[in-house]
Image (cartoon, rainbow, N blue to C red; front, top):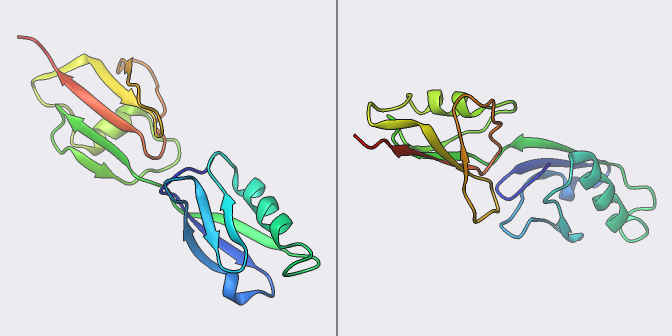
Amino acid sequence: MLGPGDRVRIKVYNEAELTGEYEVNSAGFVSLPLVGQVKASGMSTVQLESAIAARMKGKLSQDPRVNVEIAAYAPFYIFGEVKKAGEYPYRPGLTLADAIATAGGLTYRANEGRVYLRRAGSLAEQLVTLDMSVRVYPGDNIRVSERIF
């Protein structure tokens, strides 16, 4: 599913001025010249293709053919008791353990049993454990807490 910060490559056959890379904005829309804003957040690439084609049909083209592919996902963020906190590129299939490894692993002060995950677009954190095979998605925030000595 697409979300804010994702970049999509849109190809509109026989409409070169519409073909290009576009970013899903913070409100969840992609803005195309001559077409306007099209909701993208929560949609698959196939659903976005259909939505763009529907907006074009009869106005810009009688039979619009649109192709959408993901150019780049929004990054994920990890902070707290990891060796290299920061923003990292997302890749499909990423798990919590993979994300922590990407950040250089845990520090000696890390509480391995208390990791907090806030999904993109959510205000609430959920407690997850490292023994769970939790998926990480674009825009997620991971916070590794400190253990009490």
